[in-house]
Length: 312
Ligand SMILES: Nc1ncnc2c1ncn2[C@@H]1O[C@H](COP(=O)(O)OP(=O)(O)OP(=O)(O)O)[C@@H](O)[C@H]1O
Ligand SMILES: [Mg+2]
Image (cartoon, rainbow, N blue to C red; front, side, top):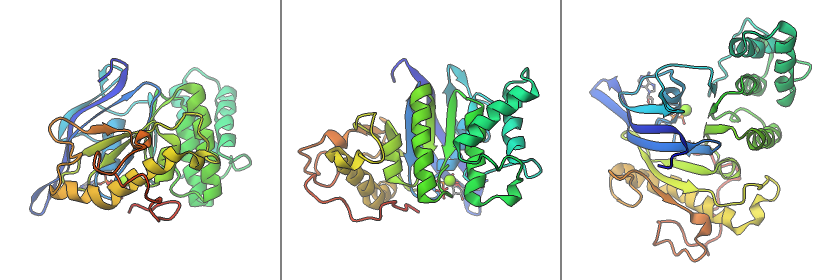
């Protein structure tokens, strides 16, 4: 892995006790994230994405393996990592302002109240919740609660953002606005991001690389897809680039076919064997015939799936 690797995951495994002994959710998970890189992970429900994110956050211990961030082993939670949870995980007795300000105060204990609130307000406005500062979580819709969680994670300006389907509960319009904001912030601050999503279009818009996880149990990162679309891509223009469809077809093909075959051990293509996951660049594969990397031919029309494909 390159020297600029900021986050390094080595030989990660998670096993839970189950009726029949032990359930190995995932095993031999290895990957790295460079500083300033945006990495998405995609895989079917239950393959262990949230568990991996919790281990990166220091909230859960792995059964085997290590996580290093910025040269140090991750052994517990820390404010240098900002987490947006799959459920919003807000403090119900605090207002919107209270929830965001609480996180800012923990991160900046020397700031006075006015400075903390001004800082928190900037991020509350960013997620479109200006005017709702005084409301308690019980008074908010699911999407609004999720946006408070996003504001809270951004407001601590962490070294690394860990996002677990952060836009899952948002309507399409709000989701688009916040995706654009996230892109803008990430590009301006060179924020390092690890994000779980079920939406292949969202992954192609946001990520520099996309980790593809095979189905569980015994899931692993089977393949790493490099996003070769120019980084100044936008939601409104991305689909004009032929690379978009090549990458999209490749991801959908993995989710529909190969993720299951790899779990069953009926293919060794991209199996993420002892050598770790292979890295592919289907966007550049203009002459692809499907043989080289298991992707559908480039000449095929985009797989007819709904715009926001649901992987679950
Ligand atoms: N505390 C636990 N005890 C036992 N099994 C668990 C525990 N936490 C998670 N699991 C199991 O581990 C597996 C992976 O769960 P995880 O939440 O990481 O999946 P996921 O990929 O995030 O799924 P989704 O896409 O539905 O969010 C599941 O089969 C789940 O039942
Ligand atoms: Mg999950």
